Image (cartoon, rainbow over all chains, first blue to last red; front, top):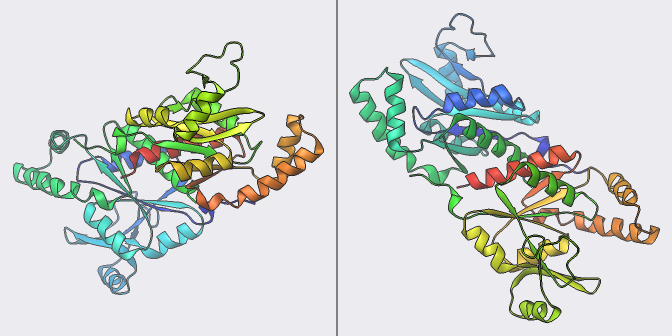
Length: 193
Length: 193
């Protein structure tokens, strides 16, 4: 008889500065909570061993990708190291229509694109407990030069100023806490009137 | 460095028709989740054996209660069977200021008073899965005459029309589900920007 907004799913956008731990939090969430669908990206890069089309990525040619951009078929896209990556509008729209929530892990620029190009979304900002902690996480990855680290830190400082555009803020102090909060946000959003 | 609205607590108002299971859900929540304070009511009725002032109720005289009403010291109050019951504004305000969430279990009329007299609040409507189920829950209490049951059902039908004034809707199908949703709402509200 009574329904919350269970007929249509919510698009959850998990964003935050580089190295804050978005991927770790998302993987931990998906392991323990399966009422949300991971948004499958499209890409022009070659499939790696074991990667399945439609599961890990939707693989497509550069020509097809560029045509899809022209046709507004991505809610966000970016070019990284000569390859394109994007979130297919149809896939997201169809999943939401089927009543399932979709979660999208994305950088701050991508989140801004989604806000501009898609009329709905629950925007969650994942932030480090402090800038010192973020720096230490970038160092721990051990793959970056000092210059790149400085750039990332400077970007992160600017990105933190965008928090006000988001609906929720999660401080990623411990993965377990962050996952619990993210799950709570997803459940609460389904109860919204 | 970064803070959500953790400095001030949220006032959570759990409301819904009579016999929907508000008390059961609240007790189950408080058993497993202690980051929220139960709002202690004031009353003019005599303390029962074992009841402690300031824990179960704030006990006060009729004169004192009426004076407090005049002084706008309750965020809601009602007279039931010649006794007064009310939610002390100071207690709620001080607890919220201390950074803790407060939860208030209250009927629909009381929730309306809170909405009118207090400038904040997260309003949660607890609804039965169906009117048939609500009727069966009223019958199970076994304490009401057929007339009273009819009145309650008719009130409930009217009360369901007020759902739009609320922030969240929880269908009380299973206590465990309802508690999980309520807890999620409380956690998510603390992450709100």
